[in-house]
Length: 582
Image (cartoon, rainbow, N blue to C red):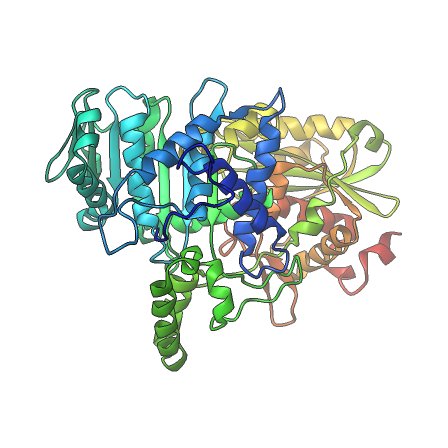
């Protein structure tokens, strides 16, 4: 966070304190207005737009949160009172870059109606050497000293003790340097902990092995380099242990890494869905700096790895730190000549994923098909269904489709066991509990899905609508399908392969691209659609790829099965759906 303190239009005239909220607004406005993506990448622009929209949303009387400028300013003022503890700088104390101001202002400015922080999970993703570790340390130190918490346990968490000490050691050196800070908050630094005697608090590093000890009750958790975690184990333990805290914080700071089965891929995917408006999560803050990959939705080509003008998108501090630009230039020269260095350059300096697989659905076009569904009106028309029973421990989907006047209408019911709702809620990414409360998900069973509940719903639906056929996968639904067939439900086996799925995928793609799909802005279906990755056979026929898809796709699979039954399956794959059924 280099740069000298210079008086700008964003500085209060009455004092030397900067107008942090205005700095955040100006920076976000600049990002949103950068429509040609010269300085800001897609994800930073979407994060900035979310901030500006939320400021307006917070002014509404019925908003679930408010914006309190005092809290935003207090946190920024505290951080800018801290000294540099590494390197040589033009100022004694830290001067926050606008990218950091934007993050801190949001994290502490937005409050729930009871006064607690709106955001209990926050992600700051940026290329290396952009001061993310210092930012994490400073935020955790502010929480430790200034947030009202009885017996706070602030944790710097990592898979190894050495990694966990990176954030902790920065905080420890700050406390050692500042006698006034130690006195004001009764702090005492030790080799492996910082004590705060006034409230019985501790700030310490912790690794995977230590996290299983009894008595762990973290109030604030900082995880630097989230990509390095190979499993969810550590985060699961910490999430569970923090359950009793009224105002917890899980702060993730990271640069991209090589793909692994750990939490980073899931967290990144959720963060991007959140910024795109696919899902809602008022508790989750995201600020993500990266050069741009190809964006088919908006017709934008991928940034060239070696185009120097694009590097600032992943390195916001580059504009105030000439040494950072110099380092990146040197690494770029080596990356051009040595293929083995190129991948590392893309990941660490451009904050690009090691492998990125594009989704099948164009979300811009998909989200536009959000007209509401009138089920009473649709009762007069025949319909077809799809039943996906792929999982007994997560989502099972039953979905209907109607074709009326050249449009496909769809409505569905999704069933989940209570254990899945609890697990997803603890993970804090996909809002299963909110969807249950809103009626988008139906709880059925405890540990596994209760198929009796699904059977009853299908039988009730058969009485209400003119169902002509329901596609299902025999391998997963032998018992249930037999019971439904015995009850005169028109079940039709749907073969799980590209030959069966391709005509349905072609028809669905034609429908939503042309605006001839109506899905009612169903958040579960939207989420499943954004997760879908397609696989192709040698004849370029497509089908859903459950192994490569980022998360659950059961609901859109059920939709495809229903469309496949409606258009007659593989026999008609060479003709347009609209020609066949117009």
